[in-house]
Image (tube, rainbow, N blue to C red):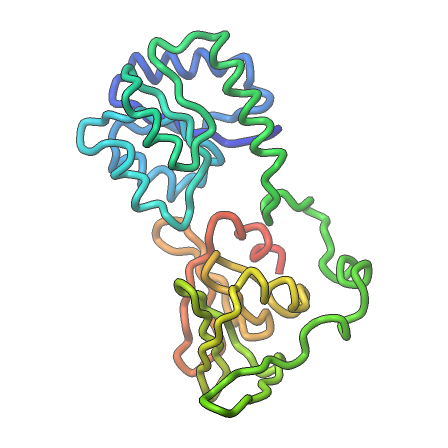
Length: 255
């Protein structure tokens, strides 16, 4: 396991103690930074993109749950730390690895680290692909491009249009529906993005966000924002700009 961690607590001594407790796991857990408030935590998570956050629940400016609401698209794994046990049920509704009661003991943290190892091992996303991963080789391994979706059926009233996949710029998923964008039209279908991704050639389309799947040939530019986040600029008439979610940063950087 190799992961990047952020420690969030409004008590300086609590942050020092957590750093000390994590020292035996330095080969596995890199402490990328600390935050002392909810607002600070949000900023650091967006800047540092940690894999796991050791998060105190009761912060000075907001509670942890309020802070997490702003991270809906980019949720790291969470280890809650608190002096109270009455938040446990709500905590496990989040992307929670564990719930630690203060004062945290080394023996209890050891169990947390083991849970973290398992969660990271189970997580299959673009950040876990090796640096030398070749999508061309993957495509050859899985079969020829003919096995991928070539045309998309779009129902409009009592008609069914056939849209060539080569003409599609991007897909945008929202709630139960997916919008298909071409240079001249937009179509709404009820196929989930996760199902489309399985049927499309990974050398032709790239997932950049849980709501966005884009055609690689239509990506004109990859730009870093003021918050050190990646955005892709498309070659469409609108020069559409889309945020890259943290889970797909490596895939986009490898294009």
